[in-house]
Image 1 (cartoon, rainbow, N blue to C red):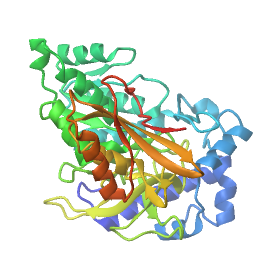
Image 2: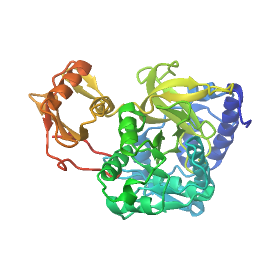
Image 3: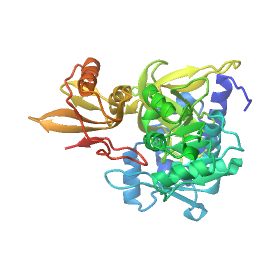
Image 4: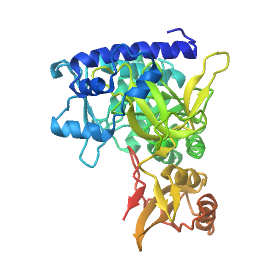
Length: 426
C-alpha cells in the first residue's frame, strides 16, 4: 500500500486481504466453515459492505462455548495445532480464561501492529523501553515487548519486581519509554514523586505508552501523569487477546485512537439496529482481523463503546478511521442508578479532575431493589475539609444524582499493576 493511501485504496487493500482470509478459512477452519457457508460468504465476496450485510457477528460467548465443547483450544484454528507456537489467554470470563494460539506468521503480524504503535509514539530504536508488566499469559505484554526487541530497542522486562525496584531499574538504565496500564503509571508516578534521592529526582522519563484501561485517553488522567512524571508525554493504545493490538495514537490527534486499518476492518454499530453509525455517533466497535489468519475473528463484537470519527493528518490527503476520545467504556459495564445510565469512565473522568485524589473506589450496592453508589477517596497529602463536598457536587451536576463521597486514610485503597478493579459490587 502507498505511504499515503486514499480511502479507496485502504478499502481495496482490506477487501483483498479479506478475500484471502476467507479463502483460507473455507478450506481449514472448522469454526467458520459452516458460518461462512450459511451466510453465503465466499472468498470472492464483492465488497466490504456485502460482507457486513451477510456475515453474522461473532461474540465472546461463541468463543466460550466453542472452547468448552472442543476443549482446550476450540475449533477456531485455521491450521493443524502442530503448526502453532504461541500460547496466550485472556484475563478471564465467568467461565475462566480463554486460551489463544498463534502461528509464527500470525504472531509476526501482531508485532507489525505494535511497530505502528511505537512509530506513532515517536519511539526511536535507540531508546530504552521499560515494560512494567508481570509478564503473565496476556498477549499485550508479549507482543509489545517482542515488537520493541525486534525493532532494536533495548527492552527491559519488569516482571517479578516490586514497584520500588522497577522505578530504580528505570533510573539505573535511563529508560526513556514506559509501557504499562494508566493505573500503574499513576502508581509509579506517585512513588517517583515521593523520592528524595537526588539521582532518582533528576531522572526524566520522556514517553509513557498506556493500554489495558480506558483512562489513557481521559484528559484528567493524562494531566495527572504528565505532572507526576515531570512533563512526560502520554500515548494511548488498545487491543485485546481475542484480536490483538488494534489502535495507536497519532501525534496530531491526542485523546483519540486510530485503527490500524492494515490489520483490521472496523465497524461501529448501533447496538439496537446493528447498522453502521455515522461519523460523530457512538456505538459498539466490531472488528474483523485481516492478518491474524491462524486464529481470526470475523465481525467480532468487542463490547467497546466508541465514537466513530475520521481524521486527516496535516500534509496528508487520506482520512484515518478514528475512535474519538478513545474507548469510552464497556457496553456491559454500564450501570443504572435510579434511572440514570452511568459508565465507570464517566465517573473516573470527574474524579481525576481533582488533583487532590490519589486513588478511589466505587462501591455498588442494592438497597430496596435499587442500585446505589458510594465513593471512597484516598487523598494526596492532607485534604481540605471541603474536598468530599466539592466532588459530590460535581458528580451531582454531571449525573443529577446524589452520590455519597467519603475520604479514607492514605494507603488504604488497593493499587493495581494490571487492570484496575475500582468498582466493587456488594
